[in-house]
Image (cartoon, rainbow, N blue to C red; front, top):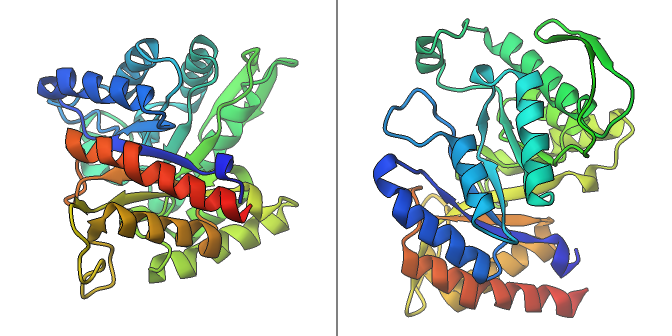
Length: 303
């Protein structure tokens, strides 16, 4: 794994009241050399800023950092329109977009938006169709006609720019296989990390599906949403009794993440607060100034 292949960012859950702080954090992260910021996409929550409107605005205020919805609430954003949104953002920002894709989890709230409720199996079928269609409607070429079970387009011209990478939040076996066949990256659900049972049992499903589809599994990133505390002093234990990462000093973080890359094939990390929310500004600065450079340096030495 090359040091430049590993990406580092942070995640935020943004409300209307949070927008000044969010803007400051993203602009600072851009100056500090972080690769990504992510916003959650829950359009049925009135106090939340719309993810894609916010990403577009924030990309316009930055120069290098990329943005993505972690993950897109696909049932409320039909795939043909999502393709238009993300290719437009990619063109306007110079390619600084990643498409996070999910089948939809909170179906009671999704249905409250007037979206027809899908069975779990149908939701996963629509999810895979959407990934494929977003890619077909990108990169130029002849008009696209597609008659899927969930999405149909007739002679629609693709956008003349490449599709952004698609990372999924797959959890179930069927959606994991869809990730292997069609996506470019995977974000393990429930903030599971490389030592978790969820990761050990899920990643092979992706790899097997990729190989069956004639793809190289190594081309599908694993990017971890990673909550934890950054402490001034080393902690006697960096993981809790259930084996989940709890945090530690900058040096302990760097050692843990370096091992994740070199020993477990991790290719990205998104910092969250210990409770899974937006990290505070001091933690984000330490992440960018101390931990990320140390991990990049350690990986480069092994490359």
